[in-house]
Image 1 (tube, helix red, strand yellow):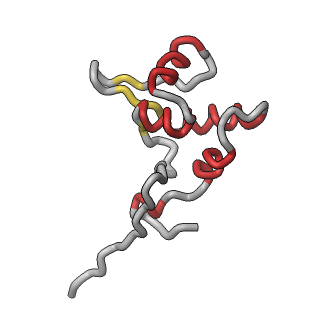
Image 2: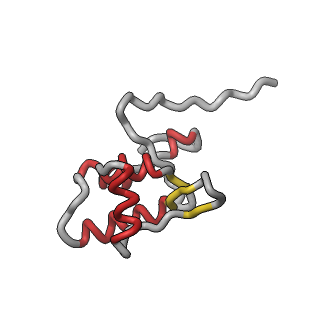
Image 3: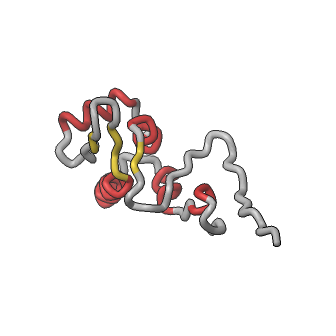
Length: 106
């Protein structure tokens, strides 16, 4: 008996898909895209803004940011004066299980 393969809708070009899991790790380039910053600005904020998510380092060439930290930072920003485009906040709030192949889009 042959099992049906899971199918997922392709992600349209230019759409950034972030996993729904709070334990996901994001590259500096993904964080920069989500926050509409450059990678250099992300590193500057790491050094100068104590409320900015701090990277997780596992070796000299592996640095990532926790998705849960980025979401918490965005939530803090949205509680005050929004510095992140509303479309970015909405994108992070959506269920992205489809991109992971673990569920249907909502």
